[in-house]
Image (cartoon, rainbow, N blue to C red; front, side):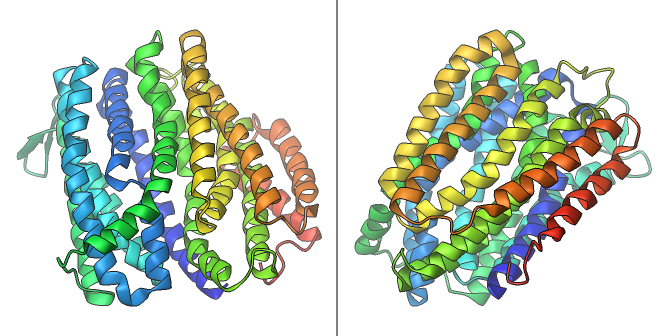
Length: 484
C-alpha cells in the first residue's frame, strides 16, 4: 500500500495542478474569444481527442501489464508498440482531416482540427514512453511531464499583455504575434512536443533504451492483448466526446451550445483527476495481486473494496456540493452578463451527478482491465455508447445542452449498475457496505448546511465549512482507518 500512496500522491498532485491549469484556461478563454470561437475550439478538441483513440487501439493497458510482469522485456515491448502507433498515427491524422471536411466545417475549424490532431498524436506517442513510469511504479516522472506540459500551455497567458484587438506584446510595445484560435492551438502542440521529449529522455535514462529491433512475434502478442480491449476503449472515448460533437449539429444553438456545455463539462472533468490518479496507481498492484492469488482470496477483494469505498466516500459529497452550489460556482468563474443561469448552470447541475458516478465507474473499469475481461469490457462500453447516442439523438434537439447532460448521467448510471452486477457475480464482491450508509448520512447533514447557507456565506468559506462537517461526521465512525 505504501507504493500506492506514493504514486497516487505524485499523480494526484501533478494532475490536480494540471486540471486546475486546464480549468484556468476555460476561465480565461471567454476573455479573448466569443462563444462561437470557444464552441469551435471545444468541438475541435473533442473531435480530435475522440479520433485519437484509433492510434492507441487498446494498447496501453496490456503494455503496462506486460512490462509490470516482465520488466526485462520492456525495451522490445516499447519498440514494437511505437512502430505500430506511428503507422496508426498517419492513418488517423488523414481520417481527422477528411471527416472534418465532410462535416462541412469552416476553414478555420479544419485548420484547428489538423493542429490539435497533431498534438493528440504527439501525446499518444509520449504515452508509450510513459507506460514505463507506471509499469515500474515511478509515477513521479509522469507527474513531472504532465506539469511541464500544462505550465507551457498557460504560460503565454501569464507573460504576454494585450494591446489593441488580438495582438500581444512583451514590454516596450513589441508585438509578438496575432493571438487567435490558431496560435493558441499551436501553443498546445508545442507543449505536447516538449512533453514527448521529456518522456523519451526520462525513459532512456531511468528505465530502458529505445530500440528499433522489431519483432513480428511481439507485435502479434501486443495486438492479441490489445485488440479485444481496443473496441472497448474506442467505445469508451467516443462516448465521452460524442455528445459535444453531436451538440454542434443537433442543438438549435449550434456551437454556442457547445461552449455552454463544454465549460460545464470542463469543470466536472477537472474533478475526475481523483479517481484517475488513484486507480492508475492501484492498477499494477491489483495486477500482481491477481497473478499471485485466486480471485476468491482476500488480497484482491480487499484492494477492490478499499478502492470502491474511498471513491464512494469522496464522490458523494463532491457531487452534492457541486449540484447545490452550481449557481454560486458559475457566477464566480464566468460573467453573468454573458452567461445567464440558463446557459452553463443547467448542464453543470446535472453533470455533477454524472461526475460522481464516474468515480465509481473508474474503479469498475480498472477491475475489468486487471482481470482481463476484454469481452465484458467491450460489451459494456459498446452498449453504453449505443445507449448514449440514442439518448442524445432524442434529447439534444429538444433540450440542447441540458439533454446532453441528462444523456451522460443516464449512461453513467447504466454502466455502473451492469458493471457492478457483473463484477459481484463473476469476479469478486465488496466485503463491506456500511460505509454507504455512513457516507450518505454525513452527506445529508452537509447538504442541509449548504442549502441554508449558500446565499448567506461566501463560497470560499462555505466549501471548507461543509468539508469539515462531512469529514467530522465520518471521523465519528473512525473512517478512514490507519490502513486505508
